Length: 108
Length: 113
Image 1: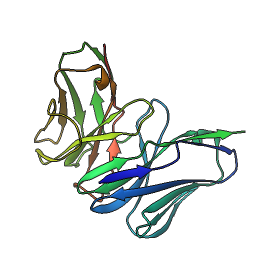
Image 2: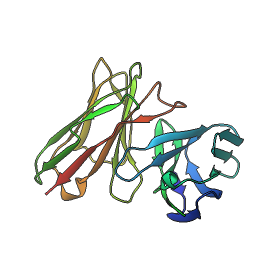
Image 3: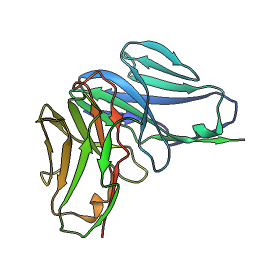
């Protein structure tokens, strides 16, 4: 089966750090995606983790633990423009299953 | 810009009608997937096409069908439209069926009245 769980909403302060967690159950698991989606727009790619560990890409980092079925997205030095939905998605058997998305609000 | 283009961007249809949505994949990408995203939800996988063959399907009824052409562009067809089909339809292309970055188009907003 395919199941992705992530919080529906989070609020964080500009300049701070926020961690968005995701747990997954994905048949034939290959890897895990994180996408950013601003309201009314298409999702844009942030990261794809296949191996365990942390991958850093500028202000954004993504972590994967395959044994725990767990991932997180870490956003540092938050900016107002980071207010968006963050989608966690597991890939397995030629199918990508998305979570509902975490709506992040960055406040001054 | 991802290089994935979709048309039309917005359309309104009546319940029971049929609709065709189109997608041009990023240059060189041989795999196209279609997703339905209802308001406040994550994208739901409809199906994937690889080299003109359906390569995987989500939990959508047969009235959702598709095609992929030799140039890897694709169509999504929905017959007998229902009110619940109102959503954003996203096309995504990638090089290969798994393990590669998926690039989304801007989507087609479908409203069924």
